[in-house]
Image (tube, rainbow over all chains, first blue to last red; front, side, top):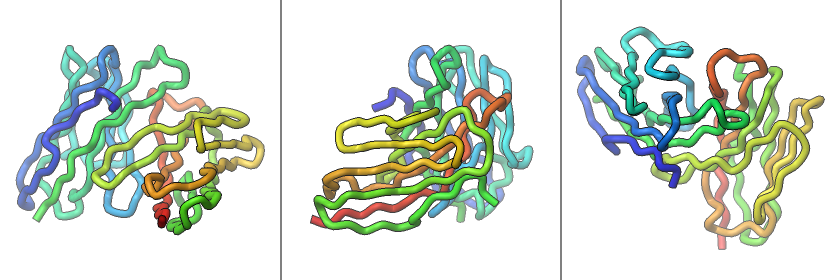
Length: 114
Length: 112
């Protein structure tokens, strides 16, 4: 186990609704990255937070937003859900002080939009 | 075009066989990761490489920086090795701390 936890494990939402996914980083890690993994695809980078500030964003629209808290836990918010948002959402925590930024992944949240 | 390409997409083997999964990338990288994903989704890091070769138990990972190619080998494969194996790279000089670019993964099934 990596020590990174995510909640909830599974979630079903309706198109147009909003969702919040949560991630608790490994102890001491101040950087969290969020990824979206559609079925049969590799994960795609959504954004990263470092010391509570967004530090890079992938090709995702503004309705994907995030927060990182002082204890380095993190949230991913998605507004106006679309069917294509159905995917596994992964968070990964890391500590830039580590050599080569080893990332530790959580178990993921599987979101289904109907 | 994806920065990271893996082959094969699917691989079936008999228990005990030697397995090779390949990864090619088209950009300058500072590190390459091999990851394992089991049904249910959780991802475990197997190796992080920037040069040469690493070995852990029955798993061996190699990288050729000049050819922009890496391989993951599994010796004496076992049904418990059945999983999706994903190659991911970290770009050289990237401003985002450790952002990874992923291949699509190789689904490995090992039969007893």
